[in-house]
Amino acid sequence: MVTPTDTRPPAALVTGGGRGIGRAIALALAADGHAVALSARSQAEIDAVAAEVAAAGGRALAVAADVTDAADVGRLVARVTADLGAPLVLVNNAGAAASHKLDGHPDDLWHRMLAVNLTGTYLVTKACAPAMLAAGWGRVVNVGSVASLTGARYIAAYTAAKHGVLGLTRALAAEWARAGITVNLVAPGYVDTPMTDASVANIVSRTGRDAEAARAAITAMSPQRRLVRPDEVAVVVRMLVRDDAGSITGAAIPVDAGATALAGTG
Ligand code: NDP
Image (cartoon, rainbow, N blue to C red):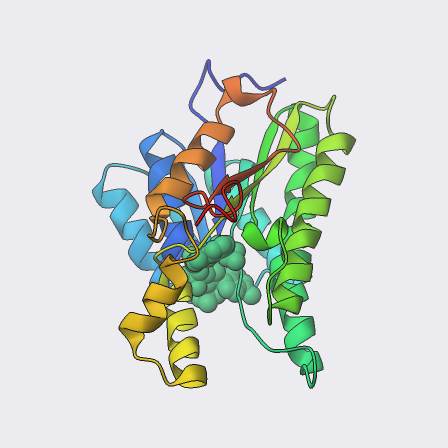
């Protein structure tokens, strides 16, 4: 049985670690002493974050992989295990968002949203699970969304995928409840990242509004009237992966400036 409090914290794997929320999570976990493996498809982006971790005195490894490709995921986890040790901390953050009304919904958009957000989470978790089960210790944090908890217009595929991630989270939390492995979900609202920049651009092109008005429409959804910062998501992740957070499992924690809990309060 691994006792991470006695030794160095175990290696952590952060998918989608090249920018946005994943970058913030990687920097936070490295600051807490984890050797951090970063993965995404763009090698240049994960290399840049690995350099930031190293500049701050941490240890990082950047391995390009597509989470929708089982063979790629297998190679990723083998490489991380060889170089840093088994990733007993896994943050499934890689994801993508796209919107379309259901009438005329492109099937490839549906499959793409399910593949990256849901199947990717399943594949990487499955690849990391044997080492966690053997160690009798593991931490899995899935980056869901408020779309894991509520429905919204024009994002059927993304919402179905992120609800699926919540279902996977709860099923595995139950399966591993006595195996020393916790599985939790963080549910961010709109976060100030390139993904939200793309949502703003989408509103601009669909409605003809200017970018400032489009951004204001997004921040108006939050009672705090602001976007969440990536480091505000990271702080919850760093708490969930601690050894003494072992009683928190199967949870879905909104990090959304009040958007879900205070819905309807204006
Ligand atoms: P970004 O678009 O800024 O970053 C997404 C990351 O995922 C990138 O590193 C990207 O790298 C990687 N990625 C995308 N597709 C794949 C793939 N097939 N294989 C491996 N990596 C992939 O997004 P955010 O930082 O904003 O989002 C991170 C997570 O947070 C996502 O799961 C998202 O759904 C969720 N989220 C975001 C919110 C927001 O408002 N921004 C709100 C709620 C949830 P690359 O393209 O190089 O592969």
